[in-house]
Image 1 (tube, rainbow, N blue to C red):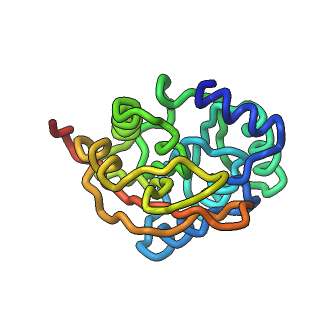
Image 2 (cartoon, rainbow, N blue to C red):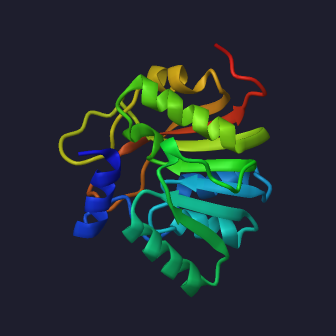
Length: 203
C-alpha cells in the first residue's frame, strides 16, 4: 500500500490517532517563542486542518495540502466554522508544485518521516527547499528512533537519517527531542527539527 493510500484508508476508517482536534503544541511553542513573524506558509500533510487554521488565526497566509480528499473536506469545514481564511488542496507533495510559493514557512507534522528510503526523504527536503523563499524556515515533527515502543505509533527516524536528507538543502537550527500529541495511550517520542533554507544546495 502506498503512503497516500495508507492515509486515505486511515481517514476513511476513522483511525487517525494523530488527528487530535487542536494545533500541535510543538508548532505553537516554536512560532510563539522564537517568534516566527506571520508570512506565507505551507503545511504539508495538513490532515483535517487544525494546525493550518491556528496559523491563519495568527496572521499567516496558509495553504494546506494533503493526499486525502476526506481530510481536506474536513479541513475546509473546520476552517469555515472557525471563520479562518485558509486554502486547502488535495495534492501529492512529492510529485507536485504548490502555486503559493515562494513561502516563508513550511510545516509538516509527521509527513517527512513516512518515507522509508533515503532517496525519498531527500526528495521531500528538496521539494520543501524549492517552495521556500530566501531564508525560509521548515519546521518538521518526526518520529524519534530513540524510542523503544511496542504497538502503534509513527515511523521512527534517527538523527543521522534526518541530517543526511536535509543537510544538502537546509541549515539545521535546532533538533530537539519532544513528543507527539495523539490519541494513543502513551505519547510517541518526536524530533522537533527547525531548519533554514540554504541559498544554494550543497552536495
